[in-house]
Amino acid sequence: MTEHTQQRRALKFRARRTFFRFLRPFLACTFLLIALSLLARVFSVVSGGTLFYTFLPQWQFPVDTGIWRADPTAMTNLLDLLGLGELGSLGGIVFSLRLDGLEQVLVLPVAWRQVITLVVVQVIVLLVTSPLLYGVLAQYRGMLEGRPRPVRGVFRWYSDLRLTAKALAVQVILNLWRLLTMLLCVLPGIVCSVLGNESGSMALLLLALPLTIAGLVVSYCLYLLLLPASYVLARSPEVSVGQAFSRGLALLGGRQGAYCKLNLSFLPWHILGMLFYGIPNLFVIPYVQMSNFLFLDPPPAPEDLGPGGSRTL
Image 1 (cartoon, helix red, strand yellow):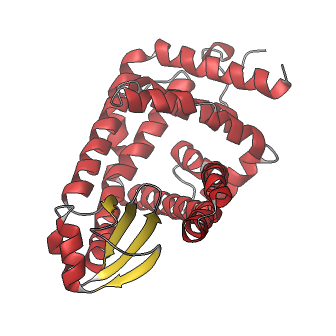
Image 2 (cartoon, one colour; image 1 turned 120 degrees about the horizontal axis):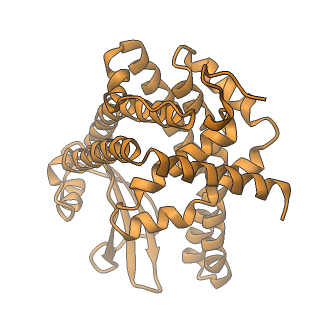
Image 3 (cartoon, helix red, strand yellow; image 1 turned 45 degrees about the vertical axis):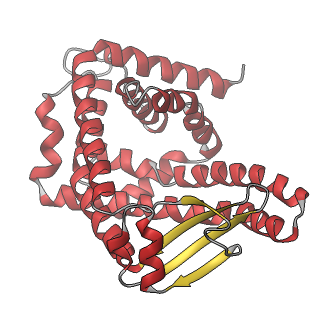
């Protein structure tokens, strides 16, 4: 067992122990976060702030793989299949991937009105959810330090416009970075899939899936390079957005690989959460977030502190 593995197991053990020590406040904070995130997701879908894809038979949508411009009539007819026909009035573009072996076409319609709606809706969602996220992270940090705060403290970030603006700015940057890295890293897999469908090359089609999976893993690890900024801001709300990112990079130091392994080790837990309708997330979310805190900037264990908060020797 390597030293990094031992350290990872030790910090994850401390995260679990802290969770069960402060079970009620953890569950209360996490429930609020999950409930608001679920409401935000429903709002995104209902308001048209989410892109949808669908599979269509080739006889119904006889196009080759590519990117196509759609006039308002064509876009409206296509979006009618998704129940979003009213968004097609300005036209848009359609991404299509022809799957000859299945006699299907993977279609992703992007209406111009939908893009406008998507941007507005996502900004609203981030504006509503970001302050609560950082309030919850601050609560987690307090419990790691052995100083649980009243649950109402999770709403602190809403009452100060400067804190709200910082939380929103960091989350916007993180989301844009995640989207950019994902698009770039999965591009080789998409190219192989497109070329394989056009040429009928089975080798390219077989290569597309592992390339796409590898691209997703690489993009996630690249996203993790900037993620520590959120933990810096949650612990030290007085720092600027730029300082949050610079200090986050400094906390990683040369440990990017170990940090990536830590977060990838939670993949089975995330899958479990999806399989059981998010119920395990009441444990998974604080478990993951506290483990990140402990990896990046661990506070002294409460039992190592004296009555006045000083460290015992």
